[in-house]
Length: 321
Image (cartoon, rainbow, N blue to C red; front, side):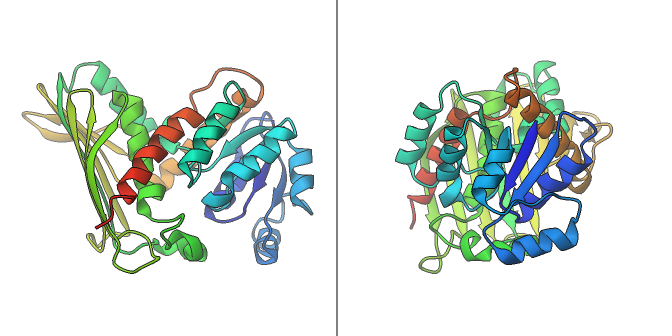
């Protein structure tokens, strides 16, 4: 797979590094392009071994697959340009910011080589949760709780993208973080529907500061909360599934735990902090992307799955108070 990366922000840089460090010759980084001169200067300085492209057209032309790591408003237009050139596409979430355009894109791309970068598709911790659920650790699920909390938004490492991440139009933690946990819920438990929600926006034009929502997966009730200034950690999250026999949870992205009535919460063997798990996840995402690009089966997030997540996210944000 000859891979081009469009956008050299945080996620673009992570994929560039993961591509260059990938152990398989099936993953071959051929171009990186960003419309920002400063970003391209940083690329040359920080990762001099990364190949750069002089234009978007050149980056697309060199590739078998195009990874899109630009701001959300540009995802679909760039994806369509790459698809029109006969390339496979791997785009960052959210799929888009317009529900009607995203729905149209899903219809256009049915059967095409397109995937969305929801990292839980390749998470070892999520794989462990699935094994526990399949083994009956939970029993019949009775409730699911999702919590997402932040000291500030954007998080410290995202400040280079504050111009859009902090704004209501295409940023906010619901699109950037909560979406991952909605994808996780649907992947592990089934189709998720929103029953009621409210989102708070303290400053006009800026992104949400808190959300509350009730959702459902079949008969399973789901509660979702999120807020800024609600934790001292830069980023804290919880996905907790309780049932008739026990419970399992995912904490701070990468720590899977199961509850034992006698021993309390037990962490999965070999659990890693997210800083150490992330390179493994990105490596495996790229391995699956190479398979998709070659026309083979894979379990990366589909545009249809991403649209289902986007629909819930945008409905939550539309419920502002």
